[in-house]
Image 1 (tube, rainbow over the protein chains, first blue to last red):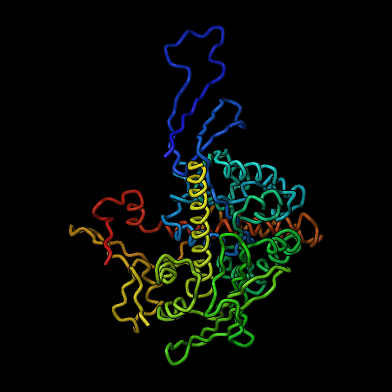
Image 2 (cartoon, rainbow over the protein chains, first blue to last red):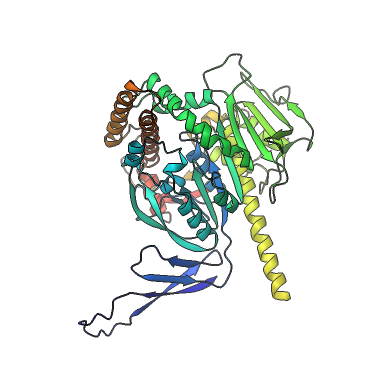
Length: 406
Length: 124
């Protein structure tokens, strides 16, 4: 563990009429850096110069999660932080409307905090939050880069209730930083900082079903208003959000089921996990035989399933001219047996022990999607990210040892 | 095939359904309540309603969007107004989730005091 010294010098201590004080004019604060290194460089406030420095290199791993509003980012974040260990909570004693979540290892920041136009600014200019003109990518890049390099930053807070920017909060470099929101892969400079990226691709039919579920009980909403909102936002969504999926290392596609003909209820889902090949520290999950094409119905003599059953598919494919592996699950788990049976037939899960996927799913059985492919694949992606993080840390440790030997 | 999962007890594996587990997410742990008599609070599983200050904003934003779009349904003003509806509807949903997450007084207490007797959990 490194110990850092902070030297804080307050300006204007020597005003002409001040009485000489007996207090030391330099405050020394000790900080411990749990992740190897930490530097605080506060230039924005201008009031005091706070400089923290540690000699060791930091290794904040940065993960990007992109999806439209109301498409399950929060649920995914809760599953992800749970896999990393420890519950993620809003910053203690901070702004109650903060969008940040902090756990022992992970800090999740919401990219809405980088809105350059608040709700009133967007109204005046007639632009949506999806529009890049409503977002400050320069600041986003500057701050994500600083955190990755081990420096704490004063990040703005976008208040989703009032629609304005609240005073900033201090974000110190965590082991894993997740940036979630509408545009984590939009700006090429920010994209370059990501160690891994995920896109949640919710089909129009499912998006509509989910928003009905979310909003129908809300006063003032109706089928028409839900539909109107989706349709009004769609051109900007198609122009600025959807194109990011081609950059993602993993895409989770959520589609209506094919097990029930003409189903449009959106209750049973067909979910596809599209995993890019050749990504450093990431080995795609496979079913039975890596690289083959397999269609699998686990229900039969050994396992009984209820209507409409479960169907899996696995195989190689191309996605935006990238080589990918696709794992697909249609249907839903009805019994614990089914989940365990499926887990035991998947390989390269990066689980620490047999049954970890099932255990994670059960632990959060109250989260949406815990009985279908969305929960299963979100959990698997969580395990893969944990594995990626551990590989990066191990590699850094090995290089440090090598350097010490030389 | 073995059906043992660490931390999950499967006393009657064929009978345990995921639905049962859905109702009792904490089933892998047994929380021992102190023996001292205490009034039991029974929580009815109904989803909490949106806090009124957000609820009002959602309703107002829908009215405003309908008005903004009456003249020109593809204008920037109309699109921005419906985007505001989405933003507030999402905020309302998050607020409901937070209320649900913080609705158990014992869970809330234990978050800050995990070491107390009431909050100890024992693995089977």
